[in-house]
Image (cartoon, rainbow over all chains, first blue to last red; front, top):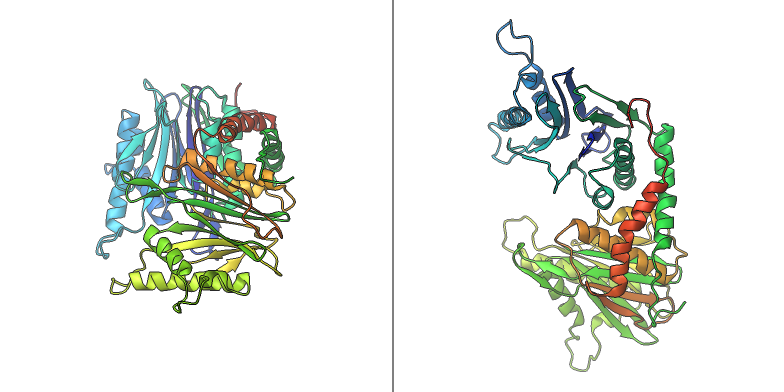
Length: 247
Length: 247
């Protein structure tokens, strides 16, 4: 499994992804699921993946391959006029890879994958998409300002309760670390290290990137502090006191 | 779907269950999934169910049917010598119902169900079991002091972080309400009202029971207060401040 989140904020976007990949519980590796591309002053793209690793890696390799003609110096991925067209290209490529891999199989869809794509192209606003195995996609907006892929349930309540579009990028990083820590504590298939990518609106450059492992002092502060913070939040709620329960 | 939790504490047990049942998202009903039996001074049993409603209701009806002979006045469920034997009886009955319903089907298991069983029989200690569709079961202990069935992921992090075996029964009720509220806010298939059953060790009587609906003042205090409490817990954590992220 996997856990990736992309948050759309007024000040930019924050992306976070775990790095655990497994083929069975005794075959675990670390692999990055968060890729970025940047043409300074022109565009920034970030792609996070969940699902079958062969499928998502193939899709990214195809997206990165240059055009057929030798004078084509740029990958197709970086020549789309809009973020919408970029999402469409990613979706089509993903669908093509899945369709090829499943050819001749028994008809049930296997080797599926999905992506969160965020980015900004000069002249446009920052946009965030969730791309499905069928190649279609949805876009984040004020009513659904973040996307999660993979093992999304454990870390969702804190996002639902705490996210604000006006948050600073630093607070958004903190929020995502809490969400990831809750997930990692509950589910073996999501694991450290965690990749972080921050993008500031209109910068059109890659921005801040960091990898958090279990020795990272800030991650440890969050992970250890959140238990105590939750307990004090819990104590702050009014006590339950029915007549029938003796103290 | 469903969400049920049984907590084993030093002072007793607390059971909580939602009441939503659905056959498709446009066919929703309220049905209790929490049943209790009591022979004062002799035993108390509580059974919570998840899965196919026909399966779990059939299982309970079979458990409640009296023996074949007309002079048998007590259901078999209430004549077992130990909680272990009671769990075994529930498991066997569940397995029998599932096996009958799936007879002649294509071999894939359908109409599955599972139970959380808790209770105490005079002379024994309070015991809590999770019973699987195959009829086998596991018991709660110091390392796994609670069981969840159904839509368990959203509400798990708060249980993992806050549960203590030494909690008061009132605090355990508060904890379960927070866990249920987090689940209900994230998932449509779990819904109010919520059934609560509290059992105090060695009382051998049914104890406190309550149903919480959306007008219940205490549930509203918890549901509304938890958002604010979480935000203040979040604010209490140290801020993230890398060199690369501008403020």
